[in-house]
Image 1 (cartoon, rainbow, N blue to C red):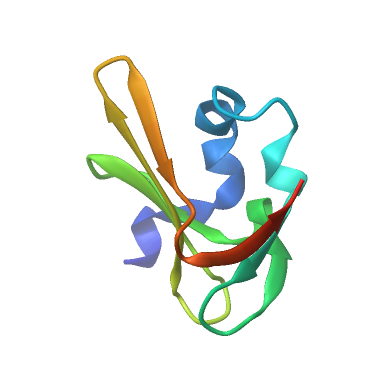
Image 2 (cartoon, one colour):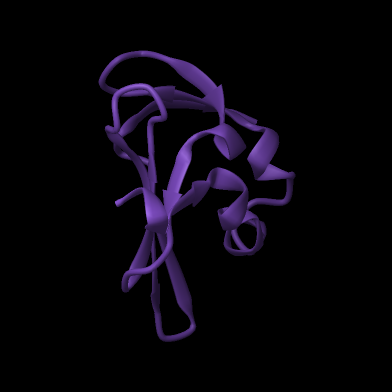
Length: 84
């Protein structure tokens, strides 16, 4: 599985369509273990129909992005908070 994992910086382009700030520097709190890291430090999986960001400490899903036609759907349900 490690061969398909990259760091969260891989999501920068897609996230720039939704957020006006540089999101890879935003701090994200894991909804499971509570660890806080910059989004760019967490683990990104991009070789699927969508993109998934997982906590680099406990592997909990923090963020999911799926492109549906022209729309980009983003779920941050696995995060306690995101510091913009």
